[in-house]
Length: 257
Image 1 (cartoon, rainbow, N blue to C red):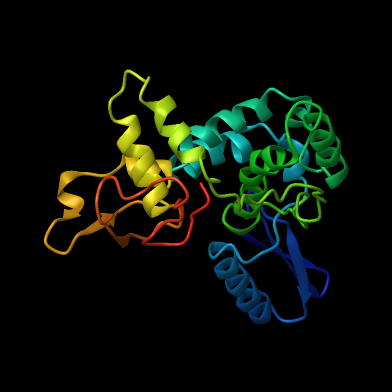
Image 2: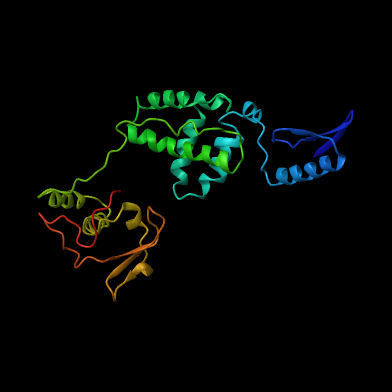
């Protein structure tokens, strides 16, 4: 709220809001003080005033306002919620989450990165910290926490990009099918054939429903994809259309899982 006090022949206005930085200004005329107070209160209502930097000294990385709040309100709405929940739970158990937000820097996450690299590959560490980087952006832009810079924005990653361009070599498809026939699940072989023929991802194949199949046009609708957009692909010409030496997908370029 706004408070106006008379200081000699001047009027001092103070604006105080919980979580926001206190602002004040002095005026010679009372009407000018009132007008400025009303203007600043409107800005406070719109969360346009600077946040109080002392808030970062009262909150740790692992407390409700950051990791836990993000996990329960943001990550839970994602398709990758189960994986992110596991990764964030792992982070919550680490000593870095006991640090105050006012003291967390890129150096702390660099140390955390190097520690995790002792157990998992660079691409896995980068994937593990991706939701943490996102939660800092949410905290800055939506929760209005006075975080000047995302501590993960400049974190360096060497060897994290491991693209997979390899296709099956002659003879490998037949050996793969032969090994799959030993599985008790009779769907493994047709799933493998469909994956090689179309380049579909595992999750896309497992989400297929009868209503997604257009038998007349020989097309298949994929409702849930990695990009979040549905797509339609031509169905294979015949169930046994993939043979040794012909392992390129006929309908679409290879998709990375």
